[in-house]
Length: 156
Image (cartoon, rainbow, N blue to C red; front, side, top):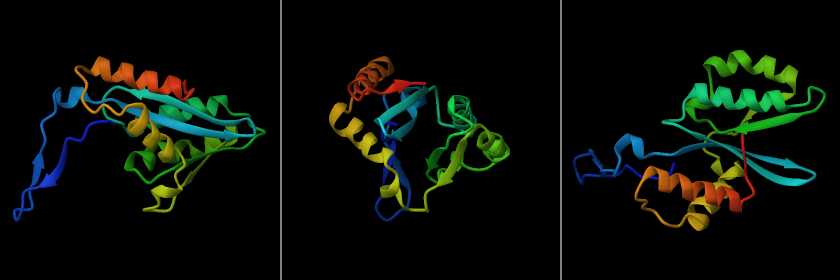
């Protein structure tokens, strides 16, 4: 979530230049999050992930949300078009989740500006965690948790 590991191309060669990270693949912290909007205001909910974000982790997160839904109510989760937000187990569970009151909707392709949680992520990364280099993954995680606390976020 918070480290850039590759971004430049070698001029004229079309090859991507790799930027080494301090801890390799172990130096990454990923987060799944939802921004709940209700009459009471906004509530950021999150789950820290170990390793990369996978479809199975997204399914588990959505299952947690579905279990908290009121079947008589309407809870809509808006997803972007990341590959792990589509297909497979999500498609299989969609009908079950709708019976629990959880509905999935997708943003149009290439429209991240419509994703309201992106503003929250920018605030988190740009203002609440402006430091870009941490001495350990534990220190990075500690800074992330402190930023979530400032946002009044709830871990689920």
